[in-house]
Image (cartoon, rainbow, N blue to C red; front, side, top):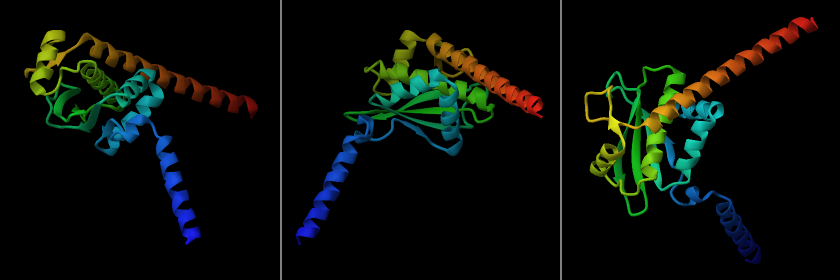
Length: 192
């Protein structure tokens, strides 16, 4: 009986200490950034490796009260790279959904993802956004009408600049990768 009690106590202590080592967001609802399909998961992984800006946006979202579900959607306007919508809220959390246009190349999708995550950070920084109506009112106040969609879309200069910055980071990392590969090839030729 003592041995069983000791084993149970060890299990309780190890479970408690494992929970103590988890980040706060994990103990309070799980990861905030939630890809909805394998392609989006890959975009996030690759994008965060290649773009410090995207990584910073993801970190900012993970430290917040906002959950962001990200998925592909063929129903968004064909000329849009992505869009953000308000889903719902609870007493403690707000829930957003970011949609991406699946017809774009990987780098354009990563830049679009960063653009939409910047919009999510804008919502994080504006606690008055609690539903679709307040989201629209917020963007009417701080944004400008989208020139791409004929719908009631709104845009911010910060989100546009963020997408462009991530695009530059992706080009730079691609160029760095090409330079690294070329250096390896030169080393092989020299060593032969």
